Length: 282
Image 1 (cartoon, helix red, strand yellow):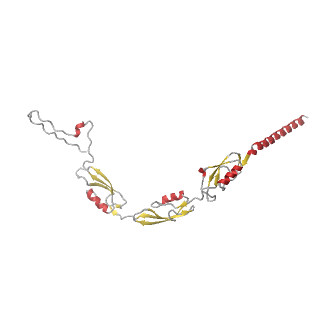
Image 2 (cartoon, helix red, strand yellow):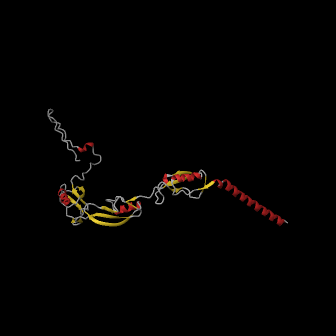
Image 3 (cartoon, rainbow, N blue to C red):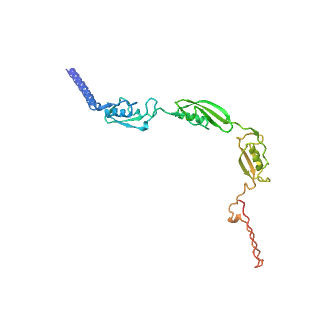
């Protein structure tokens, strides 16, 4: 009897919980899901049509221009993006954000005149283009891209290969670096400039026994091959290049030297000797 009583109690409890679960599911579907609607698929529809569909389902359509994007499949001014997936359950009155199509992406060949092929490759990657063939030729004055195929400004599709014609400066003649030591800078500079060789850096240094303006060191060294692209550095003698500074504790009048006053036994009516002033070198 006790076993039958326990079994009956268990069956009663099981039936009670099952009835409670079914009742909860029913009322949940009636009050919650009964007021929800499915999100429509608005992609590809015009904005007026999308607003009408959303309004029929009790949804509020909001155009989000921050999510406008280019598309080859969706016509311009039509819905190309929506923030909720089609078929998702939402309550009435929910805002549905959409983005418009800007149409196909218009790609044009950029102007790369004077740029390097490396810069062109970077520009192509930014515009969904790719580098085609490269052709080089000697150019007397210009280094960089001279021409493009297709020409600059041409409207092309994505991943179109762009071929480039690149010019590079023709290397000038090579000379043997002459010996400039003990020669005046004022005479050496014009001689080098006639051959397009430039003294780019001139340093001055005090060198006892040599007059100002004489080259005492040079780089490149004599006999070294040199062209118009190589800079030339020379060190020129100058006597006041390393003027010594006055010692510490020197009085303010150290820059000027004044002659001594007249002797005490000089006649009273004789004017004092003139004052001689020597200006310190700058």
